[in-house]
Image (cartoon, rainbow, N blue to C red; front, top):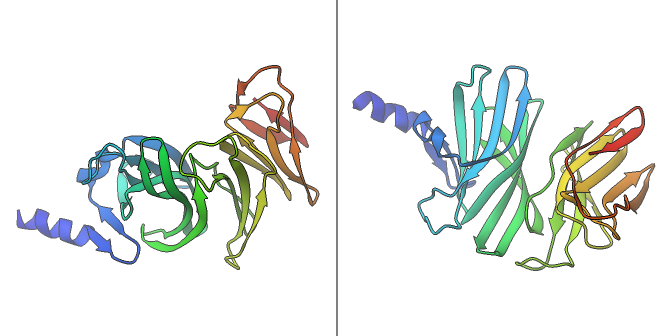
Length: 250
């Protein structure tokens, strides 16, 4: 018992500044929803969240980032639970840092008073920085790193409930200067799902392809535009990629 107690004391700690906790293998099975996985060399990072919380009101959730080796042996787990609602939706390892898109705030039923944040995490699983981009609704896109720029898309809102007036933004965050540029849509777009980057060209797709409205936020050759694929009916967006200057949408 003394050995187990000492092990827990060494491995588990709480930071008042960032509300983080490194937990032992005993709590690795608590993650209910996996949202993203990033694999770099011998390291695998799995991001998700769980509604199994101390509050246990059916809405509160804790976010988890789990670091595995290639044998799927857990090396550490970062638990984020300093807000009522905590969800990691995207994770990306770049050099000696891990970047995660985290939604934090309070959600109750269909109401979401939550904010889009970028967490910078070191390779030991400790949070080093947070950037708050503002109120959001639903999930963000994936993360793409292009040179010194971290790029993603998310939905912006002044409301805590669903609205047909939702707009989307592409965030271009410079990892060196810590400054960022916003590209905001002119009208409603579907919930961001994937951002595709080719050199200096950016394309953001939503989870649906709707008729009679823009389907892609594009920043190409220094100019912003919104592109409609003109589908005859609403379709699910599955994936997109660029090959030999051709943008393919599935």
